Image (cartoon, rainbow, N blue to C red; front, side, top):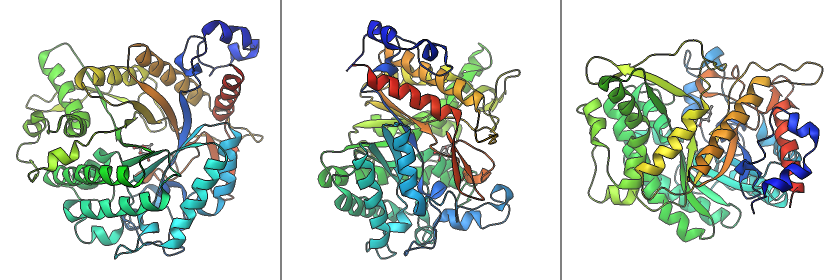
Length: 467
Ligand code: FCB
C-alpha cells in the first residue's frame, strides 16, 4: 500500500535525509508493494560445472577457447555459489532484499535424452525452499545463456528443434518446481543470445553471420512462445514473462537522417523483440537495415510467439548516441565529457525513463514491467573491510528516480532488481568487471557488503517501519 508523503517525512531520521541513496519523500519507491531485489545468473555465480551430473554448456566451451574471454577466465568456480548458496541466501535476506532473480542451468537439470537430473534439480529445490522460508519473492529465468553443448552440437538456436527441446525443459521445471516460484521468465535477453552469440560472435557459441542472428532470434522467440502455455498449465499461480535488454538510441542532431538512425537503432534493439511478442509481427524496418536476413517463419509461429504475458522484464544499462552512416544504417557517436562506468558505458538514467514511457505509447497491450536488471561495474577494492562504491550509489539513486518518473507518467512498473547481488563472471569480460553490491574476493570467496548495499538495506528497513 502507498505511504503518504507526510508519514514519510515524519518518520525519517535527519541522517536518512542526508544519505546519498534514500529516495525523495514523494518517490513511488516508498510504496511497500514496489519490489526491490537483486539478480544473478547460474553460469555467472554457481561454478561446480562438472559436479552432480551437470553437462557442459556453450559457455564452458566458449570460455575454454583462447582469446574469447578476458584473461582466459571461465565460470568453472565463479562465486562457488553451488556450495555457498545458504550463506548467499542469508546475505540476501540480511540485506532485507525482497526479491531475488536467479536462473536455472539447463545442463544441470536435464540429461541429453531429456531425463531429469535429480541431483541438479535438488539444488534448485533446496535453494527455492530456503528463499521461501526467508519470505523472498523469486523470479526464475529458465535460460540465461547456458545452452547445453549437446544442443549446440546439433545447431543450437539455428536448429528449430532447440525451441521444442526448450519447451520440454520448461515442462520439466514447472512440474518439478510448481508452487515454489513466484514468477517465471522464459529467456534472458534474446538480443544478446541471437546477436552477440550468432551475429557478431562476441558471446557463445561465437558464430558471426547476420542471417544466423535473425534465425536464432526467431527460434528463441518461438521457444518462449511454446513455453508460456506449458508454464501456465503446470504452475497456474505464478506469473509468466520474458526478460529483454532494451537499448536507448538518441540522435546526434535534429537532422532527419540522424533521427532515422536513432529510430533504426531502437528497431534493432527493441522492436526486433517487442514487436513479435506484443504485435505478432517482425518490424519491416529491421530488414531494410539488414536486407536479405528474413528468417524462415512457419505458419502459426507468430501467433505462438505473441502468447499473452503477465510481465515484461526490462534490463537497462546505458544509451547510445547515433548518426546516420550516410547509407541505410547508423553509426555510433560517443558523446564527450559524460560520466562513464568501468565498462565504458555512459551513465544516462533519462534513457530508462524515456524507453519506458515510449513503450507505453507504442504498445497498447504493454504488460506490467519489472526492471529485471540495472546496475554498473566499478573497479571496487576492499579497504579496511569496507568498499565505498560512491559512483554506484549515485547511479542507483538516479536510475530509481528515473523509474519513479516513469511511474508518475503512467507506466506500470512494479519492481526493480539490482544487477548484481555480487561480483561475478561478467561473460566476455571475465572477473575484471565488478557489478555486485557485494564484493567477492575470488581467491578466498569472501563476500564483503559494499556501501551501496548497506544503503539499500537501510532504506528497506526504514520503508518497512512505515505503515
Ligand atoms: C546483461 C546480462 C547479465 C550481466 C549484465 C551486466 O546483459 O543479462 O548477465 O552480464 O548484462
